[in-house]
Length: 295
Image 1 (spheres, rainbow, N blue to C red):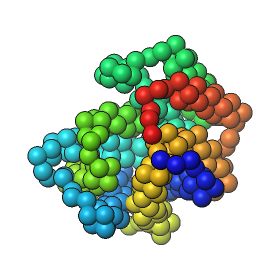
Image 2 (image 1 turned 90 degrees about the vertical axis):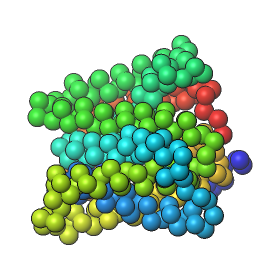
Image 3 (image 1 turned 120 degrees about the vertical axis):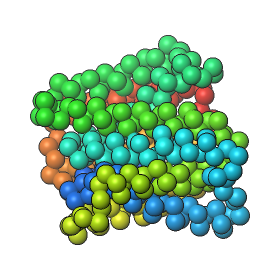
């Protein structure tokens, strides 16, 4: 791994911008598309560049090999379920709120890691970071303009979606000796397998009459926010390492707020901004003291 230069930093900002904009596009897509179908189209479009990448790099896909159960379980927990839950939640809350809630995934993951991984136990500084971060989320619940009786359930659904990301991340550690491209592509293929029948049976997508705006947003989510973004992530991981790539967590909610405010006309309150600062401070303290993350 090498030290990041200006081009690497530009790619990181681009990745954060793409992922930050995905939440407003999810919300627009939900105007016409049901959550399972939305998630299905996203992963189908993501599979295309990932399969091409594996072909170009001559990486053998192991989705249906002897470890197929692991790939299937990760595809379910790390992609299929969270994609659906986040679509359900984001459809009923402000898009930037979803971005803020998703930025806390490293904090949620640390709690699960403490109980399930021997070398990821809490230290006092890590516990302080997690506590500060989640206090920022708690503050959001006191803002009745943003979270109220009409949508708090969908806030919890979004948080549950981020928790499944964490569960999927822990399961992925079982395949840590496999190539990243193989694991991502194989698990994405399995997510398609899981989502496809449920989309057909539950949502009957052939009966949809989607708007052009929702369709364009869904195409953006699949081609850019999933497929292209994962390719950029691969490049950052292989050139600069995991530590540098995880810094994207600080930028995603900032871009999420930008897109939500300027393009979705969503209301920003002082509690939202204060919560964001507190959450990012908690993530910073946690990451600074998390020796488990290596390049």
